[in-house]
Length: 484
Image (cartoon, rainbow, N blue to C red):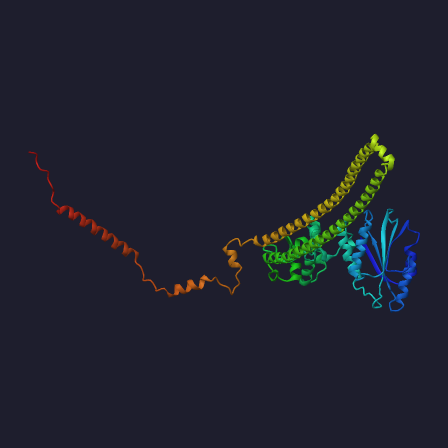
């Protein structure tokens, strides 16, 4: 809802304005910390107390206007007022709350509220300091729009809200549910370029919108989002590369895409840890609230059962007295015993007593079942909230793993040439000096005559063949013996 607040004086004029009949319905909802029972008297009290100080604007007036088509409960208004009170440091100060219902500028009947606090601290007799009240009201209003799922007006959005490092867990979940709109991406990059006149300003503007400036492998100047997606800055911002280089300098001074992804993963990891802490804190607060509500409900149920027991015992006693009165005393009682009337009355009393007992048990069971239903409903709601917290933790763990994967899946160089190109001129491969030294220490080999080697090999082969022929010639021939 839209929150508008200001410090002011003019107690009587403000009271008349809040209670005037121009509204269709005016409800004085709350008066706290004032002696007077009407609004004018209460504000006059605040004025009288302020006379003991130098404060002229002794009141703080707040208006709360929800979206026109939304139905906002009284409890939601009270919660919003309490949050503003806590953020501004007005806890415990006298305040008044008024509800108005009237036809708005669009013709729709709407309900809004006004809350007015006295700024004068009676104990210290000085006014409460309300620093940065406009910014604090904007933050509360922005949170209310997010929590209720209302469409946020343009006036409440700001550039820094796109930086996920500034998100609360609720804002992070809402951002995840929204798909990346190419038009929104283009608008964000164009706006960042338009409001920047140097590298530092552009880097800051991009980070406010959830992007990091980096050096691309092929596209020069790029912007990287929190999901690791890479966008060509000249293309998406609609400018020429030479204009980007003229404003930012050479792209070689920028971090690489892989280094930028690693930095994003680290920042997002820290953010996930903060979300873990936030969810754990809310879970502890929810558990503490559940225990308080449970104890309060159990105490209330015990009181109701004690009251019921007291009422039932009183009724049982009265009915027992009434049944006992049916027996006659003296001679008449003896006559009733003789003629059997006493026995008939006794049977009737026993029957009624049994019926009364069954009736009371039914009444007790009804109360017990109602109490069990209340506790079961309370437990079911607590279990639902616990499961939601568990799901949130699981989502955070998945997001953390996604960012880790984004770093581990960084693309390696395509070939050894690419690796060599990354070396600076003063860097050399570690194997090169070792190989060169070994080559220098080797002795110079003698010259080799290949033809002479072939001739010597041929002569050796022919010499071996001749020796084998001579051996076969000098061996005696064995003739076969004749048959006898």
